[in-house]
Length: 240
Image (spheres, rainbow, N blue to C red):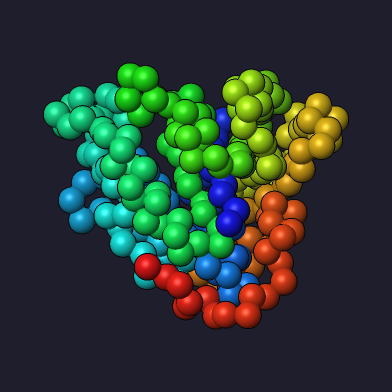
C-alpha cells in the first residue's frame, strides 16, 4: 500500500483540489484509493466540507465519520478550534480510523490542514502524524512570489525528521499569470530540490466534477507511477 500525506505551504493553496484530483485519477484507474482528512475545521452541522469532496472523488462509498473523525466549527488551527469547542483531540482515535480505512486501500491519501507544522494538539502536529503513519509527503504550493522560500522550508521541515517528500505540486490557481516570478518558479524549484519531482498543475474549470477532477489528475501521474497500470479488480472492490 502507498501512503501519502498531502500538506501545503500555507492555507488556501489548493491542497483539497490536488488531493481530490489525485484520488479521482486513481479511482478512475480501478484502484482502491481511500481518502482521509483527520481533522477539519470551519465546518458546521450538515457541512461536508473538504472531507466530503475527497469522499466523492473516491467514489462516495466511505464513511464521513472515519474519513474525518474530528470536525470543528471554528475556522482556526485544530488546537484553537478544539479548545473553543471544549473538545480534546485524541490521537488514538485518529489511529483507529486510519487503521480501519487503510485495511481496504491500495493508496491512502491523507490531507492535512494548513501546513506541515500546524498543531493538532499541544504536542502533536501534522508532521508528527505523518511520521506516525509512515506517510510520504506531497507538498502543495501556490505559484506566486515567495513560493521558493515556503517550499524549501517545508521540504526541510519534512526531511529533518526523516519524512520522504514524494513530490511538490506547483498549483497555478484559478488563473494563469505571466508575472516573471511565477513564470520562473518551476525551473528554480527543480534546481533546488534535485531528486524530488516538481509538477506544475493547471487550473480546473469545475473542481466538483468527478470527470474533470480525474482528467486533471493525469497531471499528477508522476506521483503514482506504480499505480498507473489498471488493476485486475474494479474500483468498487474493497471499499469499506
